[in-house]
Figure 1 (cartoon, rainbow, N blue to C red):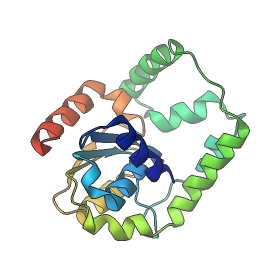
Figure 2 (cartoon, rainbow, N blue to C red; figure 1 turned 90 degrees about the vertical axis):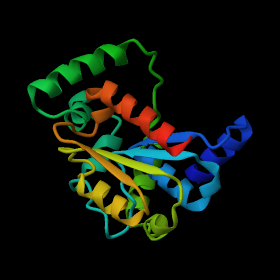
Figure 3 (cartoon, helix red, strand yellow; figure 1 turned 180 degrees about the vertical axis):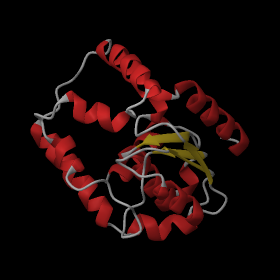
Length: 198
């Protein structure tokens, strides 16, 4: 459904083969879209994503439910996003400063439950995994090297299935690698998009 919604948005905006960058569930949506509508995208970049099925190394038991808990402490999220290192501490502080500058919309418990259900269902879904070999969109798969939520083995497994796909692992980053290494990540996306002709 979310892949179809994304396709509809791209078409409604009249975008001509854009580069789609998806983080976490957004990357899963991107993989599904590239598999279902390959002519729609010029390039795909995923980060911290998996392709579902029994071939995915799942997050630690209970983590998805913990993240969907409306009463979860901020530390639950920060511990997933950033490693417990000096670099992770600096990234956490930068992230919090930036986050506080953006007006926050309250997410309803119903929305959190639906996201939890969608993520759990995707881990069992085999369609995207089966379709990876047919993806023709130039694809860059990135991941934090110490991501507990989506272990980097998943990125390597996805790349092994998509013809011509490229992998980039950020060794000292976790699930929030695009925040921790923002300049490198943005440069890598720009370079990949140019090479892909997107």
